[in-house]
Image (cartoon, rainbow, N blue to C red):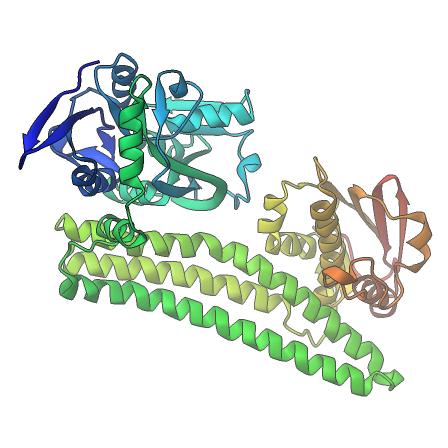
Length: 524
């Protein structure tokens, strides 16, 4: 094998031919399509290690990333400077130690639920750039995974935006760059995977000497050097800070206000919890006060669960704000920022904040104390309760079947909703703990009955006689209070004059609420 060298200052410098990915900004990309003008995080890293390894990197132009990989296999070049190790590539290449490590994000349309892990999307259609090593890893996890292989990253994101694919997977730098540069709307980061894009140099298999040379040079990179390159490409360190800072202040202020609101509400909830616990200790001995205090505690427990639902509702707009703010640096670099741009940016941020404020109002109204009893629609009360838990229902892929004819009952809607919320949250928690594969809930209206049935595993026979007892719970180590079903029974029997009972067998449970025949009429 011939080794091409030249001399610089009297010492031999080896020429290393590299085949690049021409369209992978900001990791590596050809500026204006010219592969003799490669730029990006990888290229800056090569500039650091070249003198330490006594090499000079020279680009071998190719038409695509697929051709670059083929050139390495055919020994038309010596290295791929940034690639992940796959079984296919190991047939013709050896790999240095990984020197770039990025966590992978799942990007979906903004109406899709939160993604907690890779198994949430393996049954979905995934768009990914053709030739990506990640495709091999996904097919290794699930040979039947549906992948749409695209020409480039832009096409992958557009496939998701148009609904042709459920999601795509990319590192945060790549996602932010392409979504902002090509103004692709209605996308957001739905979650992160426990998978990392660990990039190493792929070296032709027959050149162990070059592999050792590059590995030794990569080992000399310091964390500070890596961070400086990352800041240059991801945080816009090359842009004039004095002017750009003013634009970041606008976006930063929006995020700061939102975070402050969340912090204040969290502190308020903690303070309410603390005070309520003190009051229960002092006044629990007074029988006339016991019922009221228990109801307050039950509502507070429901409020805690609602905070989790609010977090799910807020995740999307917070992601949107984050991407808008990050896009400022790219738009500034492209010369797009002017007074009109700032006005549009502020208006978009205000719209997102109005949506988040409406979410808070919806949950606050649920807990508003009603003073008078009146006739209300059973169906409407249940639908409102289900809508507030939509993020959790979608996140667990729960199928809801709501059937039967609506009817009216007499009382306070909020108290009835609290009963339904207790049954719903108990079922959702059991689905989560027991990892039910196909969770289902069936709610049937059959005047004067409301039947709530789930397939969350059933109630063990040895505790069935105690589930309506105050403070009885099987989840105390997970924060269960043991008063939800007790209060539900109290509300149905004392406030509505009805009855509640249940039937349970292996795999399912059904709660039946029976209301008195008098009061209320069939809903029209």
